[in-house]
Structure formats: C-alpha cells, structure tokens
Image (tube, rainbow, N blue to C red):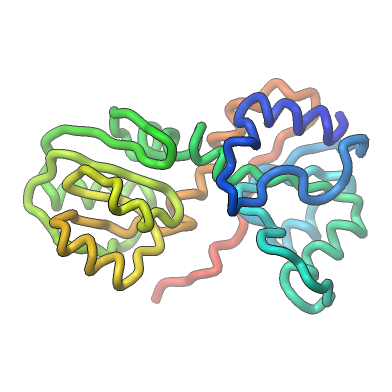
Length: 239
C-alpha cells in the first residue's frame, strides 16, 4: 500500500481537521506515493523501535515526533537522532493526536479499559453512578496497571466521574463531576481543584494513553498489509 492510501483511511476514520490548532497531526515523514510493507501503531517512537523495524515501515503514532517548529537538525539531539535513522531506513510517519483523542481514544479508555458507561464530548467523558471512593480508586489502579495514585480532595462517596486521557487538567473549568481522572496534574491544578470541591486522581499520561494502538488497531484489521501493535518505552520509572 502507499502512505497516501493509508492516510486517507485514517482521515476517514478520524479526520485530521479535528485536531487542535496547536497540534501537529498528519503526515510528518515520507510522501503519499511511498510504498510501505507494514504499519506499526504506537503511542510514541524510540530508537529501539526504529532499529528493530524492517525497512519501509509506516509508523502511526499518537504523539507527533515533530511537534513544535524544528529550527535545526543536530543528529545527537532528540528528535533529530530518531528522524535520521528513520530516513535512512525509508520509514514514514503519521501522527494522530488530538483528532483521535476526540473521536476514539478517550471513549475507548473510559468504556473498554475503565468499564464506565456514559457519554463523551470532545475530550471529556462522563458517567454517573454510585461508587465507594476507595473501591473505585482501587479498581482504576488495577485496570490501568498503576501501583499508586496521586489524589486531590479524597471523597468517601462518588456520584459522577469525568475523564480525559493524557494531560487534561487545563479542562478543569469544564468539569462537572465528583471525580476527575487525568494525567500530569500540576500543583496549582491540584490547588484549584481543591478549592472547587472536585476530587482529582492522576492516572498518568503514558498509562492513560498507552491503549492508543489497541483502539486504532481495531479499525485497521482489514488492511492488506500487516498491522503491528507496539509499545514505546515509558520514560519514567517508579521507585
């Protein structure tokens, strides 16, 4: 298949025009006429993935490797070191970031991973019910494979839950729920949530988005070339 053929399938599935203005989703490396033998799906890309991939691979990533404007390409610097090896091996790269968050990823994690039933609008998914706060947090930890959770404003009983994968604390003003689940919660976000009476739990950026490949892979099962689900490294370790 060509990169362009796959791009158009992805664009139909989750239109790139839905991405936020600050985002950089779309075709980031290669050209539409380029033929590829396989597709690798992953949240991110790292040097080991590039090294192990056969030549002529199309990487479809959640996070754009080229995000802000590149002013120089110094081969020892990130992300130039990754891009150099990708060019050498004839790889191509497409990013599906905020457009896929809106159309698929948040709902997939909320419903299929965390087991909630509710509604999703843009980046926020929400459900109502009756939960014990402690029991719900333990279930979330188990489902996401988290050893611990950072929690703000712990509550005994929960009647509504909202969630945004990745880094969603900037959406706090839009949250109408007892508990807000998201990643990358900063100190001042926590202070704001505390003053608003909203409980927050940090479910991790990587941990909440690592299901990207599974979510997208379900829609690409019928491609005539192999679709490989991969997992980039989590740069954090917990001690």
